[in-house]
Amino acid sequence: MRVENLEEKLNSRIIEAFNAGLSVIEISRAVNKNWVAHIHSLLKGTGDIDTLEKVGLRRSYGIDGKWESALKKIGYSFPRWCIGWGFDPVKAARELALGEQGDVHEALKRDFPTVYARMFGEDPPQRVPTTRIHDPHPSVTIVWHPDRNAYVAELIGNPAINAGGIDLEHALQRFLVALRFDEQIKRLELMIAQIQNQ
Image (tube, rainbow, N blue to C red):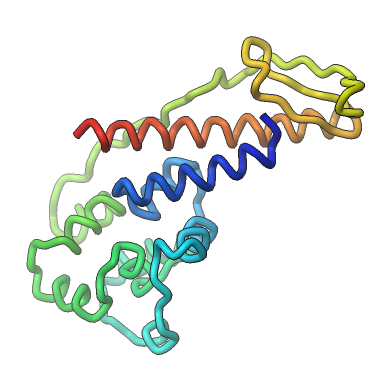
């Protein structure tokens, strides 16, 4: 499958995962992204996440510094995080300030389990290793493909994962992108299946 098609498929799986109940941060963790802006913007562009008024972005909500720091580290803000979950930022901040155990606490625990444990005196969760879909050392063939008028790199044993390039190096670079997209798609599909089986 071509890189462009894989990127479209990945975007559709991101939307599907969000609609299945995963948060923006859980999705970004699944696709190994340290920055959530792309996923948030994609979901905002499709209408799955509401647009936040500019006034709400500049307001101070008085949330815990540990959490605010964790949000900033991934390029998020408290109001955008709330909108991603469908919470009103003012009500969410109030719920956290009062210590009420509700949806906001559950969302915080899912997105930032270590920060949540530090904030509320719980034992931090054990780190779950990332699921590897493909061999970390894949075998690749690169051949000239006259029909595509390009060098084509493809995974030995799975020719559906391939990419073309103007030379050998370009074909290999695009192949690595295709392999990463395929792994991200399959990881999201596994998470969606887990949610549907619960």
